[in-house]
Image (cartoon, rainbow, N blue to C red; front, side, top):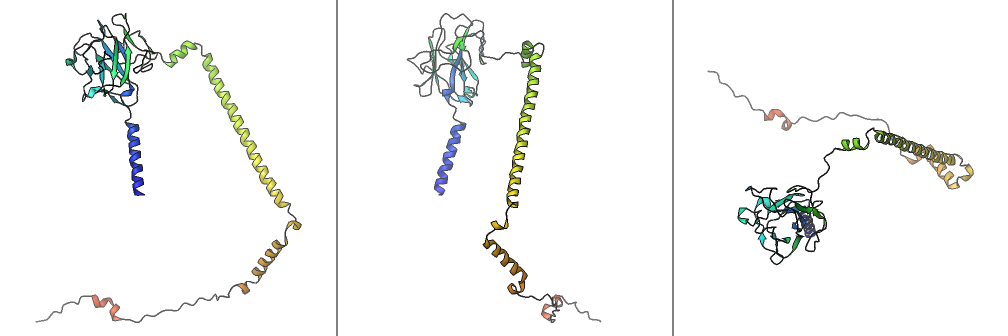
Length: 305
């Protein structure tokens, strides 16, 4: 029994561990890239270089360290992302930016190839064989014009990706979402849709009347249920009231007669007990062994000179 409980606890621990830390590199996607950069975003050295962005679609942090980046299908291990760098850990639903400037000595996020002379961009797992994501670079792109997923993380991915969900973006958005919500508040949108407030008034009146209608049905249903229950109780009482002597069996009469006989002749059933209480005083003889005097220390005698 103890051995079975032990195995069950170990299984539960493993299950929760997988549930909590189950986010892996399979949640990584290429999200946006810029091939020709002349006046767009600059790196930490103030240089304009081509760049690409990777997005974590999962809801757990993922460390890209140990994976590989490449622009050559025949050399998937072209650039190994360094391990041990705290910045390679991508938070949930966040981005990470790599610079394709062919200068890896500048840091972990500077790869050893450029996008200007590339046709494809590949992200490979730490085993160096499993392709996690791949995107075919578009041709005839304007300088400072980015190409990315219309909605972050959505679209085709993997070794057979056909760039579904990708398009030329209206603006570059490195390390931020490609798709952003309209900056107008709901109140502003409602004011544009309903400048005179007729729709709001109709909605408010509809809610009030609908609530009253629901309350009417609830109260009616409650009243009908109460009446039905009361009627059932009345019918049950009427049935018991209409019972005649002819409907009572002889055994019932015999049981009632026997009970009355026993009640009237209690002396035959129970013993007669006296109701006089006698209280006598109990005297205990004095014993010196139980006296506290025996345990008291005697006063010392004083001699007079």
